[in-house]
Image (cartoon, helix red, strand yellow):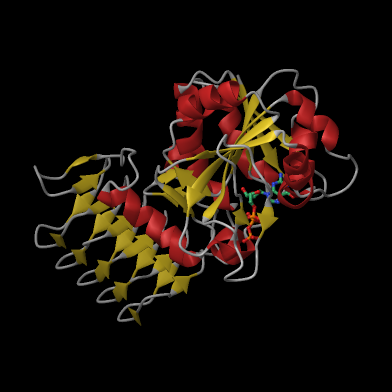
Length: 351
Ligand code: GTP
């Protein structure tokens, strides 16, 4: 089976983190989202994955050398929107395929999704997930037979017919491609799915699996911490620092003897933690990070190559790849430090 991952968006809500790396290549607990997804697709026997790229398309090139699954990138010269991107990247597909949004972290069982679609026998099946506030999403009411009644993109607050929303995972029959006009931007959520719902050929599959759209600073931080806590059932790289400590460290990490590391935490390869520094709880530290003497980092995510000055205090902060925090700085919840001006720090998992 083939799969398509939509990775071409600019990720404007995640700026400035996305000024150097596209959102799907940002690490989540030290493994990029795309790497996580390729692993899941290989597990269900996908033989080819197409990355539908546009913004910073060249940043995905290194993934083509993977061995578990064949990866191909298809580039749009200008953004075609979610529907146009599917139509362009999947042209020529002549069998059923999977489509995954590049900013949805989930552990939904893809085998179950594929077999449910086969049983529904519709033109496409959308995975649905419940949320507290559906007004920011595509809301998808279904009948007793799981057939989608209508597709309401971003309804006004309080008007949504259900709290079940489009979870960004689809199984699609190749015939759906004929519905997508070529040569212009098309939104699958606003044009293609509503038309399919009106014809009764679209099905919705309610899932209670972990699901998070990590497209904002708050949800990106949450995604990292959910990996640490085990809320997302996927492994965190590295080995246990000591039994039961819930601290995972990768190769070549150097921790000063009097530094204090409180789990859950993860520290990426080649990172150094200075004397009397304190890391965690709830800290994801990327690869090749330098943490100065006496610095304190909790409930934060530091991307690869970040440099944290001595005695800096970070709580609820995201530091972009190669970003620098001056000695003695105090940064609180919601702070985002831009990526550094140096070389782009591609997540190690993707090298
Ligand atoms: P924001 O700008 O912050 O809204 O993020 P985004 O650019 O990722 O947009 P959005 O969250 O709506 O996109 C959902 C998914 O579709 C993401 O995985 C995007 O990478 C992808 N996507 C959005 N627009 C396009 C496009 O024009 N082309 C391609 N190939 N992918 C797209």
